[in-house]
Amino acid sequence: MEYDESNNGSIPLLLIHGFLLDRTSWTAQLRGIKARTIAPDLCGFGKSPMLSPAVTIDTYAEDMRVVLDELNIKNAVIAGLSMGGYITLAFYRKYPQYVRALILANTRAGPDSAEGKKGRDENVALVKAKGVPALAEKLMPKMLTPKTTRERPEIAKSVGSMLSRQPVVGTIPALLAMRDRPDAMPALAQISVPTLIITGSEDILLPPQEAELMRDGLRGAKLVVIPGAAHLSNIDQPDAFNQAVNDFLKTIS
Ligand code: MLT
Image (cartoon, rainbow, N blue to C red; front, side, top):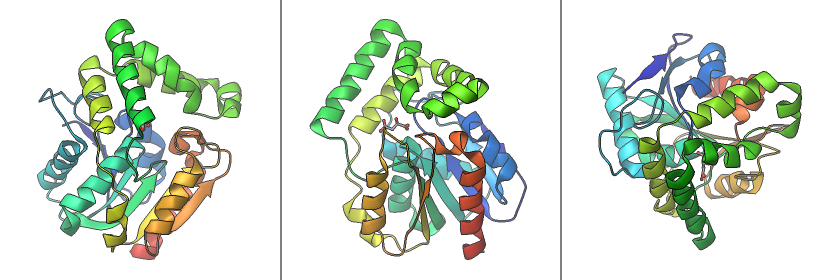
């Protein structure tokens, strides 16, 4: 699997990207977070190949463990945004011994509703009929705030091209994996490592109420709501995102 790595600190931090994104979505974090940061491309996204036609949220988590094993990292902070958060929760369930702390960004623990599952199937049909760029165009208005899109067009352009360039071969299995993921809500009470939850006040894809539900189910979790950030809070407001992570890392080092 392809990954980027930074060497700005000693704590290993694994960053798991969201759906239709790749490791380049973490560029500002590789620069600004004081950790040894590893940002892989999930299989079928970015430059990582799709090794099997069927994936689940659990198989993505297994891939992440392989990355850590290859780097001989036995204990790390595991962080994921959105679909990356689903994978982070699966990672903790499967490999708690590897986890020093968790960061759950713009994500949720609950499963897809019946309507949500129907939406996944519609998105699969859209990709089959019109390709990934059509899905990218549909999702784009939810990724960044209108203000960011208007005032920082270069960011909107780079996110738009990241979404559009992801391979069909990774996109469709990921939609099915998200559709079929289990409910991670009951397992929140079992989490015994320090946990930071981050979201954006303007996230309309997974609204802040989802973050509050996770905080309420997870003993001792800290919630940071970044003002003026939408779904991709790490790209929309990178300084505030990095600050939240760096403050959290200080508390666990
Ligand atoms: C993501 O950003 O990873 C996905 O949009 C999350 C989802 O659709 O549930």
